Amino acid sequence: MRFKKIGKIVLLSFAALKIISLILLAAYYANLCSKDAMSKKIFSKEPVKLAVLLHGTEKFCPEKLEAFLIYYERGSSLLKIVSVNPDMVFFDKKRIAKTLKKAFFETAKKDIKTAIEDFYSTLFQIINDSFEPDFYINTDYESFLKIFESNPEIQSLAQKSDFKNRDMQCLNQLEIAEAIVKLLNNNIFTNISKLKKYYPPQNAGITKLAAFNFIIDFRLNNAKVMFCDLPVKSGVRRRIEPDKENIENFFSQVYYNFTDISVKDCVGQLEVRNASGKPRMAEKAAWLLREAKFDVLEWGNFNFLYEKTIIKEYRGNFGAALKMAEVINCGKIIISYNPQNVYAASVFPGLDCEIYDKLDKKKE
Image (cartoon, rainbow, N blue to C red; front, side, top):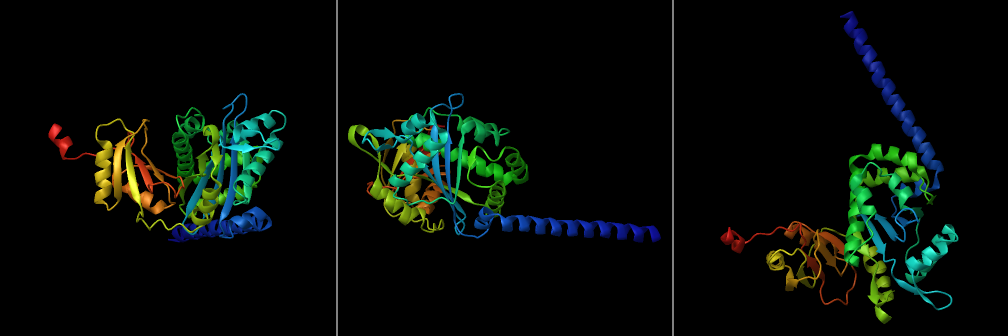
C-alpha cells in the first residue's frame, strides 16, 4: 500500500510539473507575441490582409508570375483569395502597353526588388488602392516550394504553367490553395516545423512568429477558401484590360462585405456547358439544378474538356455556388464578378462529374 501511495504521489508530481511547464510556456509565448506588432494584428480578431507574389527564375518556372490579394475574414471563417491575371495590360510612363508579367520580368533582370515594388505600385493603381496589405510575401517558386517539399501534390500543381484558358489557370491556383489549407489543417505542428526551417522565403514582410500565429488562428477557425478572379475585360486587339468599374464594385460589394455562406438562393439564371465529353452531361446537370429550384435557362456543349467541374459565379454569391456544387455533387467555385453577364453563374461539368438518370439505366 505504501508503494502505491508513493507511486500516486510521483505521478501527481509529474502531472503538476507538466501543467506548470505548459503554463510557463504559454506565458513565455504570450510575452513574445505581445512584443511582436504583427502577431498583435493577427490576434486582434480584425480581418487580416496579405499580398502574395510568386515569380519564376531562369532556372525554375521561368516566365511564370502569379499574384494574390488575400483577405482573411474571421466573421465568416473565409480566406478570400483574389487572383490577379498577369496578362492584364497597363500603360507605362511612356504610354506603351505592357502586361504585368512582361514589365515585371524586364525589370527583374536588373533588380528583383525594384520589379516587385513596381508591380505592386502598378497593381494598386489599377485597383484604385482598394486593397492595403497588412503583410507581404514575395518569393520565387523554388524557395516557396521548399516549405512543401514533402507534398507531391503541391509540388506538381505549382510547377504547371501551360493552361488552355484563364479558368484552368484559376482552377490550378484554387487547387494549390486548397491543398495547402488541407495540409496545414491536418498536420499543423509538422508543417510549422517546416516553416521554421525554411521561413522566411526571401522577401517576406511578415515575421516568423506572426506566420505561425496566422496558421494557428486559421486552423482553430477551420477557415474555408473563397477564390475570386480580379475582374478584367477584353480591350483593343483583344488585350486583357482591367475592368475598373467592376473592380471597384467587387471590392466594395463582395470582397469587403460579410459573406453569409448560409444564403444559398441564386438570384438570376444559369447556363450549363458540358466540359466532360460525356453524353448528355449538361442536360442531366441542368435538370438536377432545376429540381433544386435554380433557374437554368439553357445548356449545351463547351469547347474545352475539364478534368474538374468548374462553377463560375458572376454576382459574388458564394453561398449559392456552394449549393450548386452540393446539388451536382462536385464543383470548384470561382467568383468571376461581372453583374453585366446575362447569367448569374455558369456550370461546366467536368470529367469528375457523374450523374445518372432513367435513360442511362435503360441502356444498361
